[in-house]
Length: 267
Ligand SMILES: C[S@@+](CC[C@H](N)C(=O)[O-])C[C@H]1O[C@@H](n2cnc3c(N)ncnc32)[C@H](O)[C@@H]1O
Figure 1 (tube, rainbow, N blue to C red):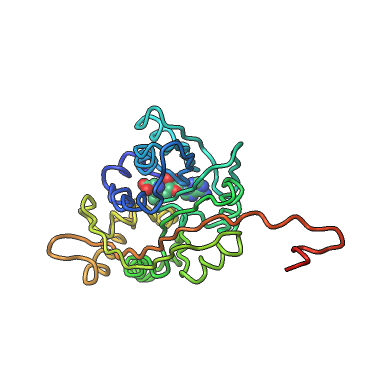
Figure 2: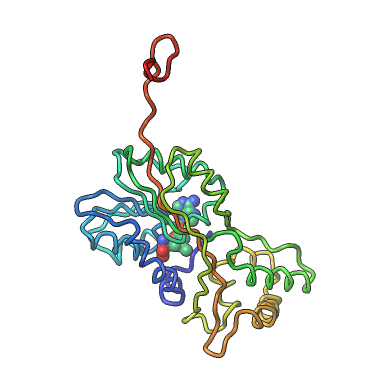
């Protein structure tokens, strides 16, 4: 998708602000080599680098990588699709903030690429939208689209349940160490037009097929529908639900033994 890079950082800086504690879960050590997958404009990568680790930021959007490079001189960033990226050497950790739920084509392929990038024992630490994320915002969109006689809005995310993502990680060769699925009501501090601003920033693809003259009244209706659940006296709050995990790449299995035995025959 196309990201409005300039408004992304200023208007929705809370995406990065809420990533802050994730760096503690990652606990990067000086000299470690860490990939920030879906790095956006590089704010999370910069936090990792502040702890002394060597960071490589990877993002599918060239405009994000251009901005990340401009904002963080001295850090390395490359354009790459998380479903396909390869790196020359093994990394100690892969971290990802608010990005894995955008990688919808094949979540198992993303996990496989992360596995391939890590040394055995390497960490995969991430936070993404979990099942139920933005349920009120999405319901308001779907109702508004129906009221205006439009088809279902195209929603570009994958919000897995904890059980589903745990199974994917374990089948992908990881041992899960921590998995949290928690409500994270998040103030839209810089999105004064609430749900409408959120749709423009994050669900712009759904607006692609909407006749231009219909966009404003449609988004007004989204705001009316979402307001009872999400507008407080102090401002709009997004109904975020986050899935946060820490996993470790399993050691490679034992080499097959002659005669088809896979384990020590004495055990
Ligand atoms: C909401 S932003 C989060 C950025 C950053 N991690 C942060 O915390 O601010 C999601 C990012 O994921 C990237 N992204 C989405 N799909 C991707 C893919 N298939 N491969 C690589 N990056 C992807 C987007 O380009 C975007 O920069």
